[in-house]
Amino acid sequence: MFTGLVEATGKITSLEPQGPGMRLVVDARELAEGVNIGDSIANNGCCLTVIEINNNCLTFEAGPETLAKTSLGTKQAGDAINLERSLQVGDRLGGHLVTGHVDGVGMLDERQDEQEWSTLWFKVPAQLTRQMAPKGSITVEGVSLTLVDVESDRFSVALIPHTLQATTLGTLQIGDSVNLETDLLAKYVEQQMSAWPNSSPLTDREANENNTAPVTDFPSSSES
Image (cartoon, rainbow, N blue to C red; front, side, top):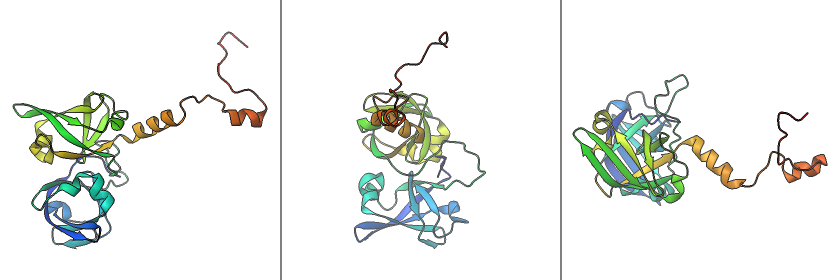
């Protein structure tokens, strides 16, 4: 579990094909201190396991599903990458709850820069916007952000100068792909609403078991 607060930006030093997947080596710089083999690290919002440590370089393995469903499959040696270690019990939750499981890949559609501030619009698979709401949370490339506007197939976020400087979001160009993870609570709400569109307080199966009719209306406060 993560918070979406990027701790450091690392640099990909090598990408080596390994079977159907990829071996990824990242220079994590100061973040590598205290990291152990087996630890989980969010790489641009994608949770990967550390399998090898060499000074400040951390090695990960990404399977074919990860490469196909995240922006990691398009990365090259030398690219910068957002890094965050997993949340410890008792840590401050400054962003929001992030699982590190990427829901889809979006694309930077529009960029509005005003001095040191920026508003970014991302094109997104339409099914993901059902899990978004203005002033809600979204994770873009591992960065916890607040949604500003949400349309049927895109959304916007407003970035402060610190976020633009401390993460890879500041260098994004139109057409660049990004990892997206929607809010965890929004996933469950959307799933329940789509799975039980005509649900009632008492289901038909429960009614049969209790030999009663399903409840469809509640009595008013004046009824006894």
